[in-house]
Amino acid sequence: MEKYLLGIDQGTTSTKVVAHTLEGKSCFLLQKEFNCVFPKLMWVEQDPCDILNTTITCLKNAVKRIKAEEGEILAIGITNQRETTIIWDKTSGKPVYNAIVWQDRRTSDMCNYYIDKGYEKEIVKKTGLIIDPYFSATKIKWLLDNIDGLREKALEGKIAFGTVDTFLIWHLTGGRIHATDATNASRTMMFNLDKQEWDEDILNEFNIPKEILPEIKDSVADYGYTDKKLIGEEIKILAVLGDQQAAAVGQICFTPGQLKCTYGTGCFALMNIGETPVYSKNRLLTTVAYRLNGRPTYALEGSVFVAGAAVQWLRDNLKLIKEAAETEDLARSLDSNDGVYIVPSFTGLGAPHWDSKARGVIVGLTRNTGIAHFARAVLEAACYQTVDLYEAMNMDSGIPFKSLKVDGGMTDNKWMLQFLADISNIDVLKPKITQITAFGVSAFAGIGSGVYNSIRDIEKLWEIDEDYKPKIDEDKRNMLITKWRKAVEIAKEYK
Image (tube, rainbow, N blue to C red):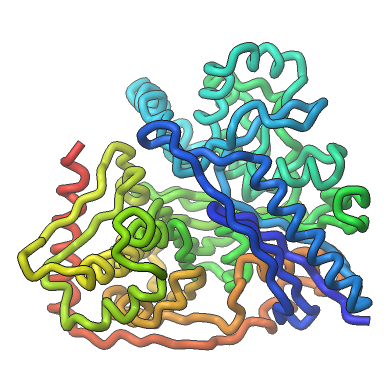
């Protein structure tokens, strides 16, 4: 009988369920897409029922498929889009409002109020985060302040808050478990890194009742089991990780200094810094990479809000391409970018700038500018933003990087990976495992079920598929980066 570990990878644009063998090989992937809605400028929402229903559908189909093959599912791991905020009624399980997505900027003015009040220093010291609409705390406060009667229900214990992992666990277990893991908790702006618990002072400052918050568990822990009526089988949920932390686990970033970057809707660089948190002087984030047996391992993280989403913008909004894959040949058709730069700050700029009001800009247009220039500029933008992140990490950590491990949908683009190696001046490594985020959380579920004894067993499963080495000279590299940074300044000034 073949034995499997299932990874639920609930992302911003789709839900996936990936089945892995105990040797770390992905056997099949089931995926369902869903949409965001944009009620107002800079607002981004999703229907939580879409998130839940796509997860249930994929999971049920995976269970049926494995049963038909007479296989056995040992455990499930859940990894998820982080910071996205959901509040639901404890009795009915129904959301009280749409999910407010991590990209949403509606609380910019609220954040500026707390920054002007001088509160950011305390937030950084306690949570490792800066004050920004990106995180969950101000989203929760907005919901409690703007939905009639919601604060009263919160005080009466009638509603529950969760990031997406918590919302899924609640429903998959039939409402038995209200819990999150330390990695997701560390993205809410309410989690004290030193104490590894919800911070009472922050909750009081934002007027968020502790009663609505989930229990915080290790990344490998007992999160209950799936409701047989819902899924068709009772299966233990034994691991939970935020999506970028799951990718870091899947990329075997278990040693301080190891660095990965995921290119999906956004672009996220995560570097292991060990068991002692390092607080950034360059406006990076300090976050929990994973927590095992009560002991957290920390990471520095840089978050870029728009990477693959800019390719979607070319396709869906501008109608310049029909498929994302077209960008590779378009970019390769040019000898240079001809001075054309796109700064895709559609929802503000993330690290290291953290400018929520910056707007997207295009610079360097001429009569010669065509579709290929737009495609190339969007791909280059993801790479330039990576350089901004890892240079800041280098300054904070003092650790020189020898390589960058990459994953995510954009890494199918070989032209982009070569340009990334060129512009960052380090080797870019792509693993053989394709669904690295689902693999990471499946591997942790394997630790929970006893398949693997420790993270050292997981290390043996990782192999390099492609290795890209820098090919351009230093003068050209510096010239390209200098022009990029001039374009970024324009984006920050245009408000």
